[in-house]
Length: 226
Figure 1 (tube, rainbow, N blue to C red):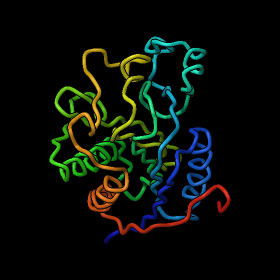
Figure 2: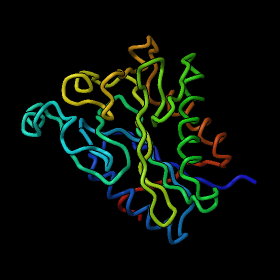
Figure 3: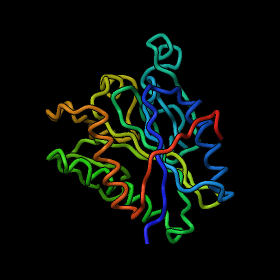
């Protein structure tokens, strides 16, 4: 039997702190069983985020002060994983889901989240893969999608960032993405795929619904209605 799931696509980049506040509000509602599972799809203005797995600022190549001058925010957050970069041109997905109905298995949840990206990429003739011991999705030796989650009261938060066509320079100049020094990062644009966010988003919704076996429908999820 398929479970219900709603999604909200936010059309313009939303600052990281605002999106985090929205996640917290929806997470609380989901934990109280006031709403069904919720997928938020969005973009962020340029920001470097630091997860709980990061070893301080050792992977930061540019000071926060210089980042600010370059128009890149710097935020420490409570998701898993290490340091990464968000910017317009990514598809960011935050999956707020009750894992009690899914066996309370974080490993399976992460692998399923990776599979949604692998299946999405396949629609554009891009072969995504996993690497043992590393979270996220790769094309060859280059990461195309970073992932990091948090689970509280068996309800997930945070999710993934898929590189469609963002400015990739900060990945190579300002940080060591995910603390991995011997591998690179890549975008769909760099792979020669000229696709926009809406096209990727529709493909992703198909993949998400299939992998998680949900009936997914658009909703109006906003800070003014929760």
